Image (cartoon, rainbow, N blue to C red; front, side, top):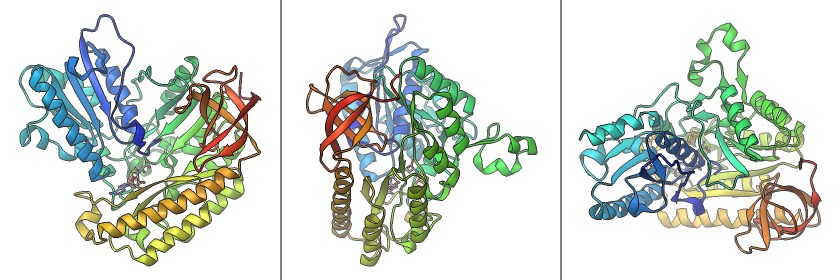
Length: 482
Ligand code: SAH
Ligand code: F3S
């Protein structure tokens, strides 16, 4: 997730350090992108001050919160099934309260409370600081709803607690919302307009994580390359800023440079990069710092210029290819990944083949591939008929996945025989005798534990691979190990 939906994390409930004075129990579960998981940590921190400790046991909860995703219909259906399960528990424990957070709360608003009457509280992504008031509303028998989207809110002043993490890698959000209005996407409607967070609060949060032993930070936003701090306010209002504000503004290249310079023993990643906003300065910052990972998630959505235009993406196929060429020239050891949508309205076989040939051209290390899912209210839903038959969508998706897998295997094979730097994150899922971590290029590396510990930076010689994983043996610490 990075911002991308990681299937194995969906529905994970969050457990934080228990405060002894807290008497109530919160069960909080998250779906969707990494931003939601990150937001849930903010929510849990706010509620820790309201008397709630987290629990993983649904049956004992006083308050159940589900942080929801609207990106595709399937994501919403998963949450709907979950809400039914909560309601079954509620029959046994009637004092339990249920709240919906995140994008579905924003998209469906009062529908949950008024028509379906299946929840007690509905809270949009910019309203979490209002949770204490909303809980009082429930207690006093009022409807508890706040779906107001904000121009300012970045939660910069709340330091999220992260105790169920691996203690090695953490996400720090730097922008919220999105201004791009890709025609297929609900995010601009559910998460509001784009705004950036104060760099000082970002650095402060990273410093705290550094002091607690974290080694890798992923800077998070819908469109990180568009980051722009000029004292607060919406990105689109930058033009109205004073000359002084403009002169002292901080953009993404500067922010990344600041982070990498201030914390030389920490690794930095970022996600997601929109091709239209990825500029040369950022590439130079990536190339300049050893501790900025050589990896860019660069969603393309389609390889056909005609479809890109229908999607309101701000670039052509050729411009995207030129951008990839430039990135590879400036950062030769870069890894790239993609998001692709199969079966966008009006997509022909020719458009689909443009996507396949683009895949071959770029040789992405991996990717996240989806079938087009029409989202109510988006421009595509209003203007274009969802006219590619389901079977055709599925076949095209499979062809894209198969080709990506082939490209991925070529890329992982190219590491065999080489030695790569790995930050150890956790035990391998397959064996308690092996560590798992990632190299700078974001590929998972698995190797025998030896005397190394989670959080160590080690050099690993790669002996074997699958299409997504490198297998090797540690040959010593890296220069990043302090
Ligand atoms: N800019 C955001 C994108 C969030 S959505 C970010 O990367 O942070 C993540 C991905 O979901 C998109 O890149 C797109 O490939 C996919 N997606 C979005 N809306 C979709 C839809 N209606 N149907 C299918 N896939 C969709
Ligand atoms: Fe969605 Fe496009 Fe923004 S995919 S999140 S509208 S960049």
